[in-house]
Image (tube, rainbow over all chains, first blue to last red; front, top):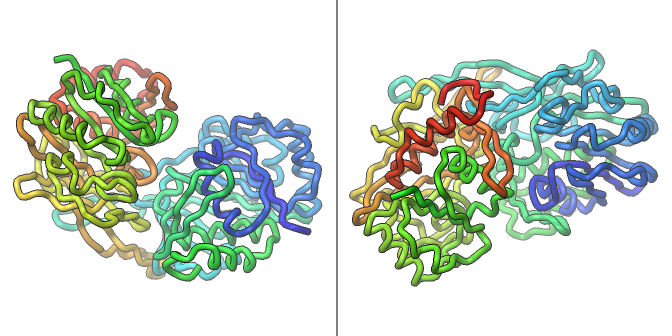
Length: 269
Length: 269
């Protein structure tokens, strides 16, 4: 099946959605996009889909009948990925708890505000091996994030990444970093024939934090109709791996396109 | 003189400028605003000004003759604040080095790309006492940022804050934080009768980093025509102190307005 992604949310292509849309465009993968304020149309769920991404898209914009269709698409093999944000999971107006989509996701969604803003250093920690996390320097150069939705993994799901929140306390010329808590960051699983994944942080500022610049190289990207973005090469690789695994999309073709398209890429992706 | 601020840059009120405009509106201070893509008009520099803020506003949008007028306004008592960003200082298209405005600022601006993206924990450190930094928990609960422009203080200027970049290295269950470098973050001074200040980081995502959520309380703000924003109470206090000192604006009136306007403020500002 040719790549056929559907991406709903992250405000507009001129704002937060420019990040995911830019990466997907650079990878050469086909994408249909719906802004956060636009209710989803039934036609979007007609064709077979490699992957459906929900990110900062309120449950109220996806009618219950279309949520059922989406879940059936996943049962028959489509991937489903929810990315964190103020309108993801419960959030502040996301309200995905208790929905059909929530039954297919690999996490239990809170029924109250689940937003955690990190005003202190918060690192990502790999807790299990997984293709989504492969080949990245989680120990030698861990990324840091700025916020996330707090959820719990379902019993049969796999926790791949977690957040590690620190408290920084200045003591004279030195800083002491105290571990303040850990929460799941990336949980993966299956639903019927489909792969499902829940990322707790955002792909775009501000919750993505320093992770948007992760890596020594830079990737510039601009999808048609979208703002141009410039991100770190390890950030680009991580999100392509997440999309590719969840949607059973050929990763190498996407990475090859990123390498060849822009000449000023400072390090190999 | 009644408060009369002029704010140029940070894209639009519907995007990054919503942060500063929202805070200023909550404080009850008058503000004229010009988006980043709009060249400044001469009329803006006619009336006396308490404060002119340039943030992500390219030097090419402010004609040399108007830069001269701005500098004369500062000489006669107006405040001048530049806030960091990709189109501030040299940046990527800011190009303020070698301009009339640069002569009045308290820092030396690089003639090459001065952007530093922080993909590792970067804390703010107070290096000197100053009204802008008063009453905030720099040692007990230091804020962290996501990026900045690298500049050097001029000889007669005062460095109030600096960045402290760490490198996080995971060693088994523990993380070691190595100091990787320090750079000036807030430099203040005077130019004629006016106060001048250079902040290296942004007031808005993504460079503001976790500082946008600094503090235990939350402040919601929305200027007319702008997006609504929600920020940390210590972030709000810091930026109000920065604006008030630089523009010789009465700080207490602004803070009083923030306290009274929103009932769900969780902690005192």
